[in-house]
Length: 233
Ligand SMILES: Nc1ncnc2c1ncn2[C@@H]1O[C@H](COP(=O)(O)OP(=O)(O)OP(=O)(O)O)[C@@H](O)[C@H]1O
Ligand SMILES: [Mg+2]
Image (spheres, rainbow, N blue to C red):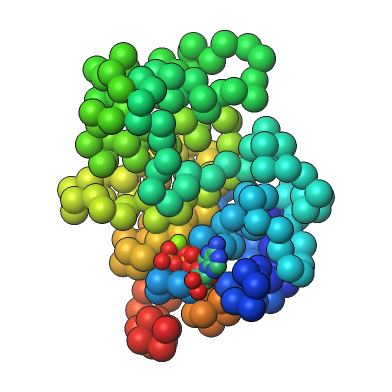
C-alpha cells in the first residue's frame, strides 16, 4: 500500500470537515475523490499534505505513519500536492517556477526540466517569460511540471480541471493517464465526475465530510447512488 488514511478526521473549530475517513491508494493506481462543494476534499488533501493537523486518525505513507513529518519532509519523501487554483508564482519566470519544484534537491535538475519542456512545448516557448503570461491551461501544466520535479511517488491533484475549456480538460485527463502509465500513482480530487471516473481505477465519494460510496470507477460511473450523493449535499 502506498498511502493509507485511517479513520481520519479534520476539524476547524466546530466545523467537522472530514469525519472518520479511511482510504487507500496502491502503487500504480489512479484514485479519485469526488464530492460537492464543501464535502471535505481539500481538507483531506491538506491533512495528507501536512499543512492541516488531523483531529484524529493516522496517515500512513510507504508503510510508516507520517503524522509527525512536516509538509516539506513529505514532499521530499514523494508525497506532492498540486493545490487548488495552481498557486504558481506569477511574477517568476516559467523556468524559475519549475526550479522551485526541485528546491529540496542538491543536484541541478537540468535534464528533468528539459524532459518537462519536451512534454509541454508551450512552457518551453515561454520559459523566460513571467508565468503571468500563461493561459489557465498552461498554468495548470506548469503546476504539474513543478510537482513532477519533486519526483513524486504519489501526486495529489486538487480540482485540476477547474476553469479549463473542454478541450484542455480532455488534454489534462490524457496527461494524467500518461503520467500514470509511466508509473506515477495519482490521487485526483475532482468535481468533473464524468472525466474523473473515466480516468481513475477506483473512487471514493464524500458527502459533508463522510465517505458515502467507494468502489471501482467503472461501476460507480453507472451507479444511481452517485447522483444522490450530489443531490444530498
Ligand atoms: N480554513 C477553514 N476554516 C474554517 N472552515 C473551513 C476551512 N476550510 C474549509 N472549511 C470548511 O470545511 C468544510 C470542507 O471544506 P473543503 O474546502 O475541504 O471542501 P471541498 O470539498 O474541497 O470543497 P470545494 O469543492 O468547494 O473545494 C466546509 O464546510 C468549509 O466551509
Ligand atoms: Mg476544495
